[in-house]
Length: 404
Image 1 (cartoon, rainbow, N blue to C red):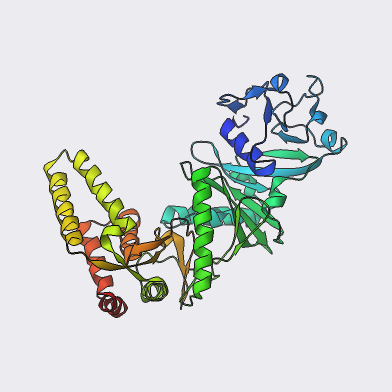
Image 2: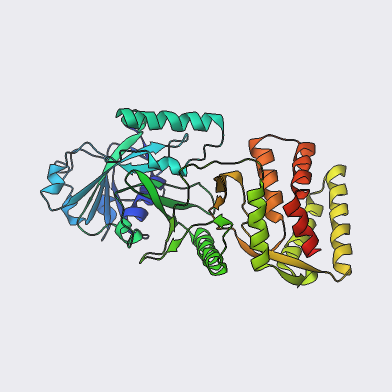
């Protein structure tokens, strides 16, 4: 049975391989493409860039594919017809999400499942899944995991050439991104079967701004010459995307609890970026006040109303004191799955949500809460206990005393 293709995936493939705003014409007489919302048929297009085809009978159906610079072909048509017409070819496999949309795309020539570098294998089930896929690639039977394949025929350069300009690599794989307002695609570039770089490709204004924020944050870290932790290097290219170095060490561990290495990172980051700011003028305080107001509207139960009153009283009392507080740079999405650890350092990536003026130890609380809730399934008492342990660490006590 032929695997159905979603129109949203066709759009992503066109954006990645052809152009961000490529015009797509779909020839789908066998109805393989699902949810073609607003898509135009072949004979309705005036000057399309791309032909997306699912039929094995293009010539019989009088479809002049040679008018197109790019053809994305999901059919079983043999390549000879296109190659003899002067096209070059890229053959790709894909593995679907549970909802049958594409998750990973990679060339048929990929010998090692380097796309697993996109995969969060923090729990046991995910680790087993990763091991099975690696074993399948090693035994040469990886096709059993493939959801399908397609070919791209082209007579003009592919967009991925511009996306990866300036970086030498042997092969690549693609993660189509997590659905949501901040969605982006990520290309993984590899040499000698090991990932060397990631290319982040924003799909909307929100994800573009997050990428720009990450690139600015990485430049700030570089200027501060921080030594206690490792962060990606960033490169520029001719396409509006970001190329980041892979910082995952060969002996990488993902820790679900804070260690002295994490606290050493905080200590150095604060020492290089901290500044004293009037609380009433701080952006985070204004944002907190807005959130407290929203909580008052949503307070339908006695318990949430009590929380609202307590938070409002605290925020009112603090600002009336006319306090100045130390704010510093933060990662702001500091979690076990955004960090790796070796014997002497931690490696921190995905700085998209980084902020320059955040209350100190925000990353500490965020790490413990995220790990406790999502990985360890801890209750409030257990999470509070972990926070207390972290705050009592000598490095943490020293930081608190310095900025009190």
